[in-house]
Length: 67
Image (cartoon, rainbow, N blue to C red):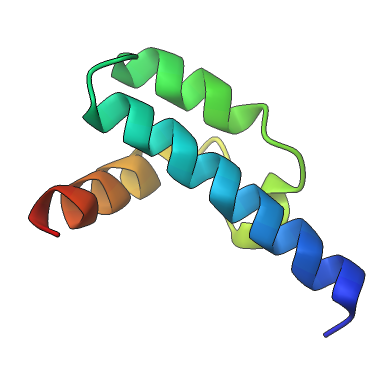
């Protein structure tokens, strides 16, 4: 995989993780988190779209709560 593609994926993943952390901490609500995630650059590279964004949030949110 090219370095640029890997960087784009890593950056998108980190941005989504930060948003989900804010949701977990109660700084933002679910709708705000969904809207913020949908604005992340290169989102399609990590497989998130408008159809599965809520599922991704729930999966990641519960993983982080369990950790």
